[in-house]
Length: 224
Picture 1 (cartoon, rainbow, N blue to C red):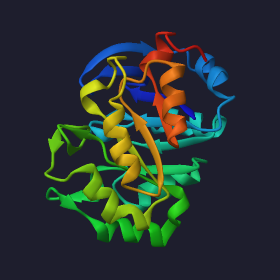
Picture 2 (picture 1 turned 90 degrees about the vertical axis):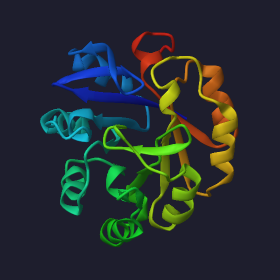
Picture 3 (picture 1 turned 180 degrees about the horizontal axis):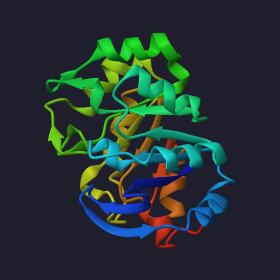
Picture 4 (picture 1 turned 120 degrees about the horizontal axis):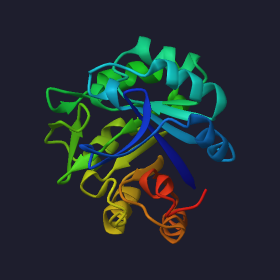
């Protein structure tokens, strides 16, 4: 399944390369809402909140009212998760708060699950060099995505994996990495990182993996 991505920064929709360099930005929100409204799920990430340098809560609220979405970026407490779900999001994406002092924070995962139920939770296992990166991908841990999925699986409905090295480059996501992750969990698996074609999305769908796509949509390499 194709999941369009809306990344927010400074009050705009943006696309970054490898989480660092801004390549595109848009303010024509209505156009993208209209294009994405036919999809069963849209991903919204507040990059400013992820980087702890502000937030785009009004925009998140607007999109959540108009689109079926899962929302992430800077959600590091039960209170923030609850507020996002109350806006209308179907699921929240939790990342950095699951890794404390570079280690897996299963206690927080269990608290989230007890509070909201597994179905409303997606856990991020974004990685660079085979190790999970947090805090807007600025901090690296020693934890591998497979380790995290093994320990956190009981507390969530699925995992979001971003292959940071290929994010925004539109050169494809490494399928061997995705296959290894797919074999490591029975939860829903959603991946991102350079996905560039409908053929690639079909390959992922064939192994029961959903594809988050941003740059290829906004540059119209993939038509939506």
